[in-house]
Length: 266
Length: 363
Image (cartoon, rainbow over all chains, first blue to last red; front, top):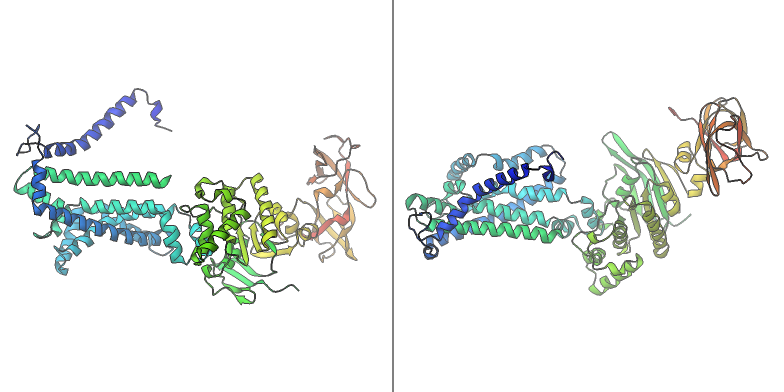
């Protein structure tokens, strides 16, 4: 190999230092937020003069925060279910199908990943206003499902490509109808991809803020929107506490995914 | 006439302008082990897939006991199949793989248990029941696939090059297993392979495919000892082809002239040939002798290479006009010929063991 880690010599040190720097650059803000959420200063001062759980108490005492979190969870869960179902069907069509315009369809379904979010947000905002879907849960779910679809489709399509169709054919010869063969044999065989798809699309919705700002109404706010709104009105450490919880759930889900993958692959 | 069991009637499969199977017609009696042999792309797998229901034929019919199978979807054909690739269900144990066809048929649990045990003992993998497929070797996986395909007592078992991914020794081992299982179950087997030794080892009859048609069908002996065409002679066993010109035929024997002008008389004539027509004389390697025998034809050759293989020698010789011949004469302790010795040595063969075919276009 051109770049063999074991043969880099002194460059190894430089590479490690650079990697550490990049990791620190990515992680430090998150660590600061978490530290600030436990700090006793009302003004988000660093280093904190003392430590407290007060902001978490305030967070859980305020029904508007709880409601925002529940709204986020509800929308993200629905989005994940829809994105996985649609992603599964689309993957079968794209991986197995032989039809004109297949590549165009694949590109179209992956567009939300490359399209600037704000462009998508404005477009869907204007469109949903006309349909009367602005500020509704359904509107939220539809918008987030479109955004989450690429994240659901990529792992499922990859898993399906790695699955030998002869195995499904074998199930059919054994007497299973094509649908039964897919449900009892193909689906369990690609379950790692399906789980990944569910978690990625949940997260795509859970921490999405741009589209959510456009879709939100005073009565329907997701957690990121609530954080964003509070940040502008009063700069309270409760925001840091809410952000820390957001990060904690994301982290927990990523760990679950990693563990599941390891368990299922052995 | 044997009882009508499986019949393939004028089966044709075209993919656009390319016709993969040309009007194949076949009758397969119950209990037979029939092999579709042929090079890749000869239509043997396509024919098998049409029987399984994975390919809709362009025209023609497949009948089982007089009833057409074509309108029956694959999962209701009740056919067993072992695939070329490993197709065990990766998330199910060996026992659950074998049980799968019984479970989709909603058989009672007690029946399933008994049948799975029977099948695993048939393929001698009883102790592997709880393993996952990933923990099995390729040969074991194909044996489980065989058990799964036979678990519901299908009238027909299709096998699509099931051993092609295995190494030679394992292949021979499992061939013996397949023979035994065929004997014990009496199931009708259609087996696809491109390996002629495998076909000869396993089959009651062999259908040799070429370019979507059956070139010849018969027992291994028929194909080897009485090849209908040059292609069959070349595909089954080793063969030497010598360019020849047909002189005359009489009473089933023919005379030909070889490239050096020498004349061979008494060759078996199974094809109708014109006087002076270009032909090809085929002689099996084992038909050659190093010393003259009454009535044998002789060739003047130069010995290129000679090796001793116990019961036989392998002698590579070159004829005066440059053709190389691979000869496998029986070893003879008094024969002390040396390589490269004298040009102008003679080797001999029985003309009645040689075959004369018309030269093919472009051949």
